[in-house]
Length: 164
View 1 (cartoon, helix red, strand yellow):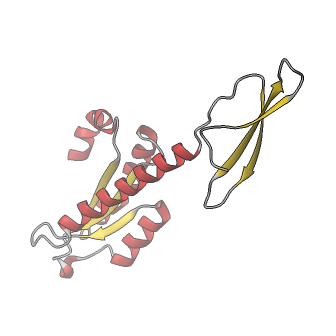
View 2 (tube, helix red, strand yellow):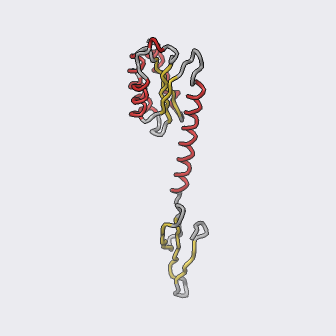
View 3 (cartoon, helix red, strand yellow):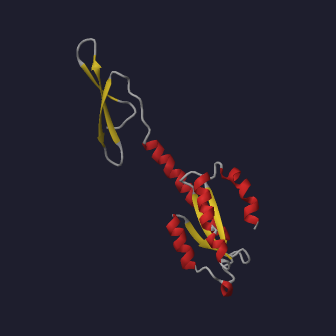
């Protein structure tokens, strides 16, 4: 009931989000089933590289468990998210859930920055041709050959930006 009341304001919280924690109650199957709606909403309002952890809460209520750990873990794997079970009552895995999500966000940002740097394109003057070849350790070697100079000879210069 409370979920519907807050659904209208949630889109404002998605803007710029790097991560999300989706929590369900292991003793209430409807809260687990609602994960589909929340996943769909995340996909609609966020970037595809959002880090998500699905958390099954109330792990201390073993005698009331309806959603098995295996089912929650498989659902998270199918969605490509992290998974953990917690107990807010006795603090089991609460800190760890946040730490895992933060580490996943950090690794994702670091990898995206690394990828962005590896795709950086440096402009060449219009009178240059470039020969590109793969180097070692993931480097790219670029040799620049300029257009004919006024004396009729070709220049063959190495670009200062690149290794050989």
